[in-house]
Amino acid sequence: MTSSSSSTLAALVATCGVEADGRSSIRVYDPEAGRATLAASRALERRAEGDARCVAWSPSNGALCAGTTEAGCVLMKPDLSDLGRVPERAVAGEGEVHAVDFSAGSRYLVAGGTGEARVWDLKRKREHRVFSGHTGGVATVKYGMFGRVVGSGGHDGTVLVRDVESGATKAKLSPPTLSGVTSIDFSEYSPQHLVSACADGTVRLWDAEVGELQSTLTVRGSECYQVEFSPVAPGLVGYVKSDGRVVLQDVASPTPSGALTFRSTQVTCMAWHYSGFGLVVGTSNGVVTWLDTRKISGGADIATCKIYDVKAHEGAVNSLSWQKPVPHSFQVESTPARGDNLPDSPMTPVAEKSNRLLHGQRAHTPPAAALAREELKLVGTNPIPTTADVSSLLDAAVEKFGGDLSARVRDVHLELLRQHQLQQEETARMFADMQHAQLEMAAEIAALRIALENSRSA
Image 1 (cartoon, rainbow, N blue to C red):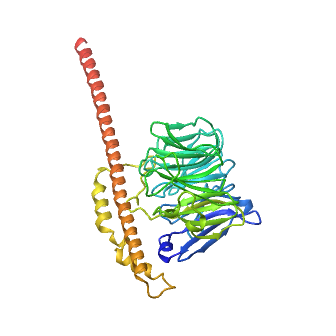
Image 2 (cartoon, helix red, strand yellow):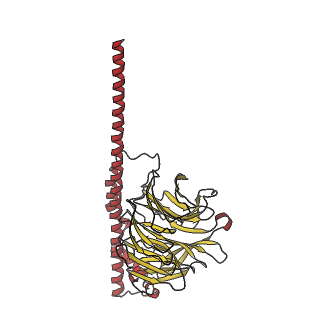
Image 3 (tube, one colour):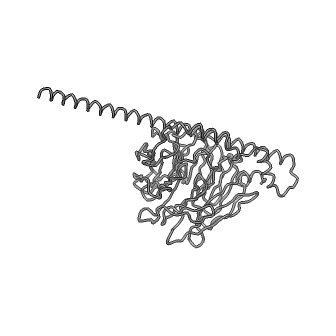
């Protein structure tokens, strides 16, 4: 593997899995040139914390959340030192967590467990909202539609999409054949689209706005453990199955665009790299493997696609999470808390944020030449790079620069949409207040007329 291909994956990967003594452990790996280095490790206390079922990085990358069977959500720093827990003291029914997801601004955390999905306000350290409705446990949760809805998939085979603030159910997605939902994900490019995976092996595409099934990507077979949209390719999804297959498929195509198979093991979880060029998968034998998605094609072998792998756990890998670049425009939480006042002029921040994103934060994205120089530092085995090496590094630097620029433009676009929605809501409230004031004035005028007529007749 070349140093340029590994350095593009330089973002921390968190894993949770089972060890030889039966306890769960959480580990953080730092991909470097040629290998993945163990950066931190933590074993959970069996009695106090139970087993780790899932892990997720916050969008700010400052916190890692682990969902446990006894202690609820355990929050940690990247070095796995304690940040706290929610709830601070778990009671019966709140301690078991199977899935977690952070809101865009890292302020809110949704956790799915035994029959309910709970949204926690991490700033105020209190429960923000409880979503019930599943007849069994909640296996997967996800924020979607620019953070305004929460989707949850249950063992009862249904997917519920709820409004974060009102709590209203926007859609109930029930497939023709009910089988436990194992994973869901919302598209970043087409926010109304949601993809779900089930225990019977089916992967389905839904329109969550109208509550309709759009297509079935794969029919019944081996259990599908996880499905996720590509962060850069609209319509491309990746999913992993119990028969060891890793599959890439366009939602508009009835057949996969690429697949590979791990022999004699199950692929239990996956996570995309933010560039879309990398995929990390965990298996039932405790191995975590980094893959180059550009090399995954029909019938591809693992040796061709593998960047490197590590023996992360003695038992199965339960969950993976790969850090993403911190979005510049979502430093302020996009989902206001109940009772929070909206800005007096909702459109005011747009120009300021757009100007800061496109002109005032150039230090966050160094020029391509600087990126190339940084990449060249990692070429330790060849002090004098060849022309091919330099060309490859420059291509990677330009590609990285373009990806960062696209992400910033997308952030501006999303912020404009959010501010437009806030302005519409503010306008609607203003007209409602005006109508209410007019009704009060009409009632007051009618009362004055009656009083005047009474005084004249007297």
